[in-house]
Image (tube, rainbow, N blue to C red; front, side):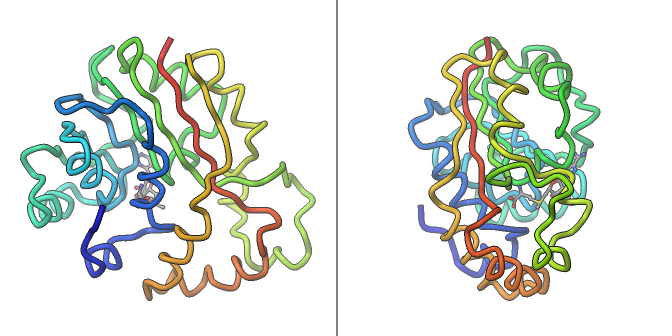
Amino acid sequence: MNYDKDFLNENMMGPNSMVIAKELTQGLPFIKGMKVLDLGCGRGLTSVFLAKEFGVQVFALDLWTSSTDNYNRFKQMSVSDLVVPLQIDALNLPFPNEYFDAVVSIDSYHYFANNDTYFSEVLKPILKKDAIVAIAFPGMKFEIENNIPEEMKPLWDEDILKMVHSIDWWKPKFENHLNDFQISEMDCFDKAWSDWLSCENPYALEDMLMIDTDNGRYMNLIKLSGRVK
Ligand SMILES: C[S@@+](CC[C@H](N)C(=O)[O-])C[C@H]1O[C@@H](n2cnc3c(N)ncnc32)[C@H](O)[C@@H]1O
């Protein structure tokens, strides 16, 4: 994995999603030709990663990013024959039942799926039996609820805080639906965040103080994987 630094810096939207994708997909049986949904792909970094590393066919779905902009990026990265750019709301997925061999979702699932029913009622039906599920998102080491540490109050966005949760909170949303289910903190937290904080995006500059003040106490990155039952 060796991607152009300027391309990465221009297109990161948070902690480096290519670094997260590398750790998340390690050891999972992605095979050339599989049909993979990249759910909430943003500017498509992870879609480029999946197409280039595994030769899979990627449906690169995102709400905020224009499909034309993503198409241009996929052409620039020579993967437009493998990646289909789609601007669609993850709450209204227009795919047939049992369509995908895998779903990958990085740093976006918490925005639209932080509830008890999204996986079982919206996402699972469009995945084949035995499909690979690989999801990573920002989380908390434990539930914060209303006990927000004083020093973090000015640094954490209230809306985001409602979406980020602990491993124990996420676990029951998946465990009965997946075989080989695993959920854990990610090892790449420091690397993924330091790439983002040094990319000169104005949002990254705002995040610097948050990461320094948190200092490894509350925030984490969570990964989960399994095969659809
Ligand atoms: C922080 S960005 C991460 C993007 C990308 N996965 C990455 O890591 O670079 C979060 C993404 O979630 C997407 N998102 C939020 N709500 C969504 C929804 N309802 N449907 C589809 N995508 C959504 C946004 O469009 C945005 O691109």
